[in-house]
Length: 107
Image (tube, rainbow, N blue to C red; front, side, top):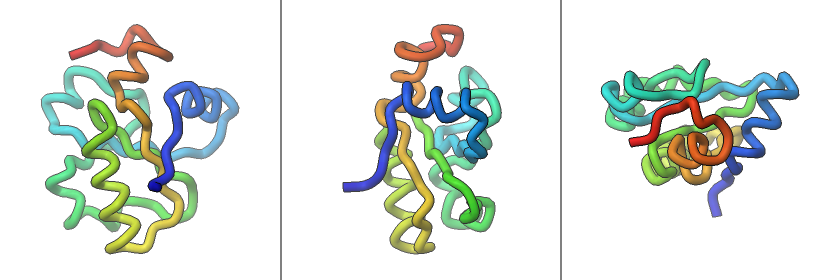
């Protein structure tokens, strides 16, 4: 099973000041519509050529709409680049919007 965390757990870790790196793997138009503040956009289709932008010195949380593309990104980075610091946001930004921050638009 690939590592993941709930929106509530991510919120608690961000609130505590933990040095997390957030990477959103959705498309630019999705990211423009709504995002978690402070996240970096690296669309899933660009991840292979931009993998060097994923840090390995702190926890990295991968984000998409419902958690499927970010899980694919996590599997790719684990298997191809041997990252061990990755977490998938379970339920994606949709769950974040519904359960943590209602100001983030739903779509």
